[in-house]
Length: 129
Image (cartoon, helix red, strand yellow):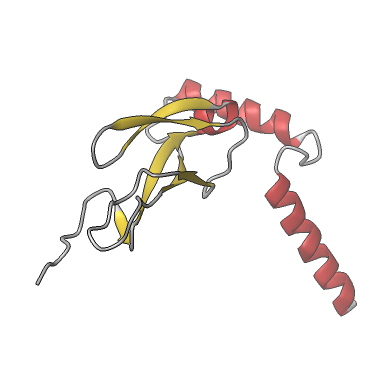
């Protein structure tokens, strides 16, 4: 009987593999190529500008070759945007200034937040609040 051991980076579903890829706020916002491991080598994943946390990328034929079935599965990479930690006072001030500039434009830079707030507003309007 064959058992598949857990892997520290990948989860397996049939011939497909999944992994999480941590990226910085700047990478998610501006876009950049990042190296992603596969079972046999590193490959380049192009993270496009304005990628949201949780975005899923499919890398065809980078999964597992089955001994029972033909073909090779895919690798699914889920992007996780990391929040910066251990910021200096200057970096925190720069981030506050950036946030103020973004917020001053009516939320057009935050599509999920804007749609969420619109949904909340509509919900309360329907309730007569």
